[in-house]
Length: 342
Image: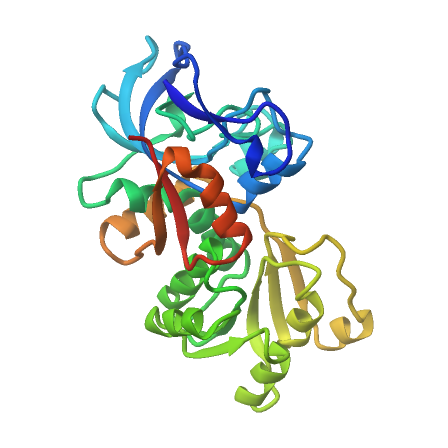
């Protein structure tokens, strides 16, 4: 089969379109003929320098939709030809977190395309329990855009921050995959949404998606803009995934009893905070990482009903993986960039 492989970490020049063996599945696994694989910032970090990446040579890709091509002898709930999307997290299912239903807290979990070979290929293998059947109402492209971005955004806003109707929610970088997902989910929860982006075109797209207020973060301090609109109050929830570059403004944007939920640090890991202001305003700062398979099933159901619509920036052929990485690194996309084997 054809796949995008890198033999060592580095720039996009390390991504090679090569012939590799089709994966051999075990008794409890399935082989998926990949229809679409979406690209994530995590793929870029994995390609560059993340030490957890294995095995080498490595095939990236955590967001995968396709058809079941083969089932292991112990698999009875799936058949060849089933349309599926893969849940990206492979938990150990034995630790206390897994037994408590918090599989995304498992210390021994693996991520498809990160600690295993992934979907930048014509075929990928995965545990059968990770394959979620999808109806013909959901396209392969939309299905592939859901797992990482929408699962992360859902866990942040619904499970962790518990957004309620009438809340004011600030979504950073609404043009990113997780940002566009957060915007949609916040609106679905009945929130008033403030969205930031770097260009007028991206702000226009955010308004078309339902953002009530938009802010160009390259031209203004977005915390000041938030306070201007809210008469000094601030927002109830900040959807933070940028990190060091926005941390101070994000905290400053919060109203009293506000909640900041963070899932990423694309601009750096370290952010300072005025502890006195934090306790005086009774702020809540929380982290969030991915989500559970049951949450993903709920999200897919909403997408199949048309209540959530993944935003797709571009669909490129698999061999254009390096270009897909370049687009995301240059922040040229609004929504997900996807790869499609020929």
